[in-house]
Amino acid sequence: MSGADSREIERVAIVGVSTYWGRELAEVLAHDERIGSIIGIDTRPPDSLPEGVEFIEADIRNPVITRLLPDLAPDVVVHCGIIWYPEEGRPSRALHDINVIGTLNLLAACEKVENLSAVVVRGSAAIYGTAPARPVFFTEEMARDLPLVTRFQRDIGELEGYFENFTRRRPGVTCCMLRFQAEVGPDLDSPLVRYLSLPVVPVQLGFDPLLQILHPVDATGALAAAVVNPVDGPVNVAPDGSMSLSRLLRLAGKIAIPLPPIVSGALFKRLGGLLDGADMYRDGELLMRFGRGCDNTRIRKEVGYRFAFNTEGAARDFASGRPGPARFVHPPRPGAGVRVVP
Amino acid sequence: MTAGDSGRSGGIGSEVVWANEVLDVWERALRRVTGEYTEDEWGFDEEFAEAVFPSFDFLFSKWWRVEVEGVRNVPGHGRVLIVANHAGTIFPFDAIMIGTAIQKLHPLPRWTRALVLNWVWQLPFVSWFMRRVGGIPANPANLERLLQQDEPVMVFPEGVKGFGKPFSERYRTQRFGRGGFVEVAIRNRTPIVPVAVVGSEEIYPKLGESELLARLTGAPYFPLTPTFPFLGPAGLVPLPSRWRIEFLEPVDLSAYPPEAADDPSLVFDLSEEIRERIQQGIYHGLVERGPAFI
Image 1 (cartoon, rainbow over the protein chains, first blue to last red):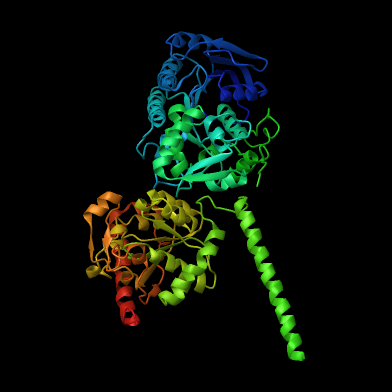
Image 2 (image 1 turned 90 degrees about the horizontal axis):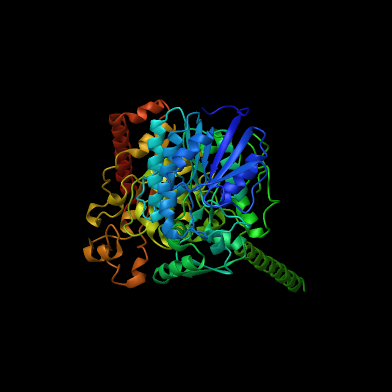
């Protein structure tokens, strides 16, 4: 179903439009002349929506969605409702319900949409797990090779399982699962960014993870590119190159304090709470010990997205501390000119 | 008079050199602290590797007096897989010495990556150090990606079976895993350079092991050598044996189509052939080297 650049989409439904990434995507798609109309779905209205985006209040955890969605008759459903960190009104104990049950319900609803051409899910690279010895760059077929040890990793594993079932049952629909690396940017507000922005950053003694730093511009750009040109199966969203945590902190002018494991375990848990990361501290603790890298050949070659920033560029942009390089409206399109930041 | 002049000007000259050196070190330190250096996507830090290289060079030339044969068998550019016997019990100095030999004696020197035993990567500091000097977790996917980037890569197919064998079994190559390295080499049309290392078995002669300490540390085994752990950290100083590293004739796999990698009997035969050549190289090397320590 993946088509050429000229492909027209009559109607896109963005589920989870009130999340940061849902709103960013709506902003981009609203300015894309290849998109007919946009419907945003979420449990609460977003702070602002671009003109022309219709908002519908609905909860994907509620089976009502299976009646609502077929009536809206979208060509493409984008699921931005998988949340990584607890937010206001979405405590960490609700994450499993929102992420797993919500996705299950949403896919059930998608089965009833007749003219559906594609489903795009904004998932996570957490499916690859975190471990000391491993492929340094995971390719898409390596999912679940490592044991999934945190709750979030298991949730992602579970919802990808539902997604694979859906893919088998609806062969005519292009089912694209995007696996995002963690985004880091100066104007982003997430527990990971808050952690990296601490004046003095506690790190784990003797460990220095290799990280891929996904710039927010690319996070939204890749998502938009996948909506316009979806491909079947999982696709990693990760920038070129990688960088050690120590170098990232040095570039940002931070002081790292190495802590031995006895102290760092308890501290990360406490810090997780302070930074509003709640249960996610465990994912962060593992990531900040062993790191994780993903191969990005599929998103570059098959989806055709060109990254605006490599890891180093994203890190330098974060280190500069400026609130974003001109809050973008038009991210690089597939095939657009590249702006590589050294 | 003239002698005094030249003496004075020599003094000023050396002061200038000295001052320049201090400035250089200071500038480099400043760059490091502000993160202005490069790492590749594997976390290899060339500047760091260069900084520790003198200590490798000391071990190479002074401590182990390494004699090298056939370093030109390693191609000067493009992908190559270097396959060697493994020993050392405590620290993989053989990998470091092979890398040092290529860096020091090859007409076209390159940094060689080494696939390092999985267990190492959970260790603090050790994993940190290994990655900076070019170590990479042993995994076929990593090997494949490195070869596709045209890097020279070292593998030790004996793995921990060779690395941790007792002193009484020295210089007897163990089974070469499942020959996965041959599969990857065939698929990626990579020449294999077998290497026979002599001397690495005597640096930490493993006389026994402690099961209790192994369980406590989570290590695959805990070696007991004449000096370790009885002399504490001082027992970690490797014995000054005499080494000989021989790079053997490359094995050309370009005649095999990539599908040949799926033929287990071919892969096994090739892997066994390479093991046999390394074993012969070791026997030859032992004779050439003579006594272990003098």
